[in-house]
Length: 261
Image 1 (cartoon, rainbow, N blue to C red):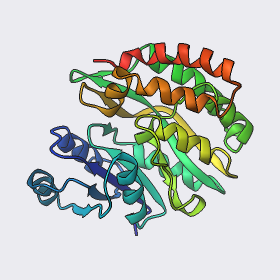
Image 2 (cartoon, rainbow, N blue to C red; image 1 turned 60 degrees about the vertical axis):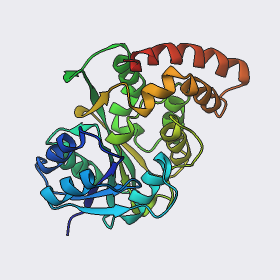
Image 3 (cartoon, rainbow, N blue to C red; image 1 turned 30 degrees about the vertical axis):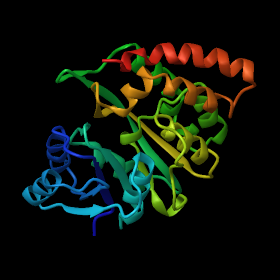
Image 4 (tube, one colour; image 1 turned 45 degrees about the vertical axis):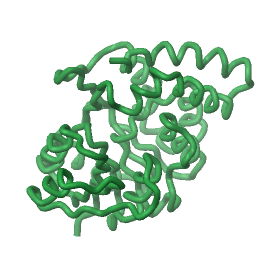
C-alpha cells in the first residue's frame, strides 16, 4: 500500500495542470494521485481520464482553503501533499520526503527548498528566494527539527515555507489544517498553528519543486491589491507588539514585490 498521496487541487481550466501531472508521474517512488475540484468540467475530467486519475468534487461551497481541507480529508494515506495546479515537482521529491518521514519518531510536516517558474523559465535565485532560504537556514541543523521555539522564531519573521512543498503526516495533525480566513496568508496561519504541536518540522534544503509565478495566481493578485500586506500584518501581530508588526510588514511586503508579474 502506498504511504503517500498527491492531491491535485484543480480550478476551472488551468493549462499548466498537465505539466504538474507529468511531474508527479515521473517521481522515482510511486504515490497515489487524485484530483479534487469545486469546479468540475470537461477539461479536468478529460485530463483525469487520460492519466487514469480519480476526480473528487468538493460538496461544500468551494474556495482555496475549503478545497485544500477537503482534499486533505479524502486522502487515505499517512502522508499527503496538496499539489497546486500550476506548480511542478522534481523526480526525487517523494523519495526524499519518505526517507525524512521514516527517520522521524513524530513527524508533523516535511517541506523543501524551491525554485520559481517565470515566463516558462526556472529561476533558482532571486531576492525573495534568498530571504526565505536565510530564514530557514537554522532548520538545516537536524537538532532543531523538534524545537517549537526555533520554528516560531522563524515564522515570526515571515513565511518561508512554500505551501505546495509541504507533506503532512496526518496521524499527528488535526483533521482540519487551514482556516477559512485569509486570501493569501492562509498557509502562514496554518504553519503558526502547527508550530505549537509536539513533533518534527522536517526541512530539506534541496530544490525539489518549482512554484509558478504568473498574473492569474492568487498570490500575485493578493500582492497587487495589497490584501497580502494586510494579512501579513495580522500574522505578525500573533508574534510581536503592534509597533514591531508594522515595521516588519513594511520590509516583508517589499521583499514580496517580486510576485508581481
